Image 1 (tube, helix red, strand yellow):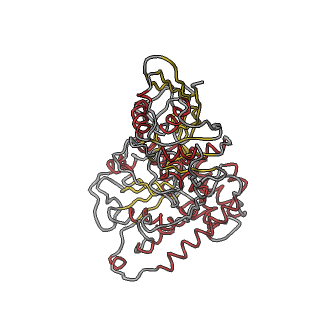
Image 2 (cartoon, rainbow, N blue to C red):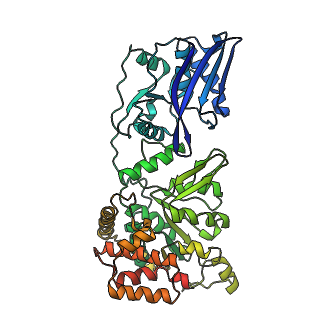
Image 3 (cartoon, rainbow, N blue to C red):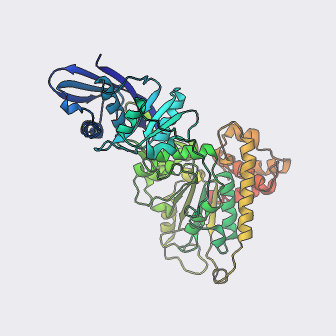
Length: 510
């Protein structure tokens, strides 16, 4: 029987699907067709496979005077990318009996073929390896460059291959290829990813306090102030005080970068910091496109998304952020299926108070009229502001502070230690719930977790009854207060914690 079946995989968003690669050799005039809703890059696989097989010393399809059909099933799932090349070549070799038969049911073949038969790296290998484990597939064959990435996943045998000839020798038992050892991930705060150290910031003690609360509980932060007051530097400094990511957070971030084709190392073992430009399109920031890819908000997953000059971003883009901020994911709707990209990020935004930038400045006069100030600030809608827990004004730095030579590295380290302790408390609190920070709590979990003393309860009722808070704002104040209490190692939230959390939302009343 001139029929074979091997397995490969496709990437749909960030999820992997198992693909059956069926090859049938039949009598007739020569033809080589790939069916199963293949895109342009996949239809070109015929030429890559032909040349790779010829240069590996075996009879290629274009030398066969027979009809060759390769079917990628399921046929209703669109196939994109070049990762099917290796499976098509192995399937053809089995169907033409140029390679000894083997049990292909527990194996997945992933890789792009070069014309000389070498196997090139592809995107989404970690995602495919996790899918293989979920489907009880024991062995995965990947390009050598992707082996460390695939070996992050436990309970699967990863076979790295340099070229097609080496893989054929392995499958026929003529050569042994050692499985890739388990990849050990070490979380890092490498200096190349720490854009600014918090110790380098002079003055701005109130803003540093807000940064610490934001880092400890994963709370969104909006900074408003005159040009040159240090808003951008403060946002970049947040990366230097975030704690190292947990293993599950590293795997989540690595899956996103791998699916997007942006993985330059074997893992994303630091917290991402993404800062898209104001001219970025909604698709670039939110995600999607003809072949859906993660956007900036997903690339910032478990890290920081920094939007500088917030009012200059498109209005529809800013409003599209509301759902991901609330749910920690973005839903991309398509005719045939819906894709979900994770997007749990800390939103850090910076803006000037008006068009000229000096409204409320103590030293420089604002040139804007009252209506111009109002119109500029209204570019940020109330519902979006309601989702930002911490809203602060960043004043101009005094000359004496700028000229100070000494840097308080001890205070910066103490800040980091407090954040790490607060995160550890939250990790124990939410054990088994798949959430890591206070900001991720649902309203139900917030009611169960946040314990108020009697004065704090009275204070909260008072500010709510005076219409200073929406229902969403009520829970966001509770979450921020819980983080402040964690920083102070207090089990109970008191009036001081609530008052500090509420003062960061004073902008809601303006």
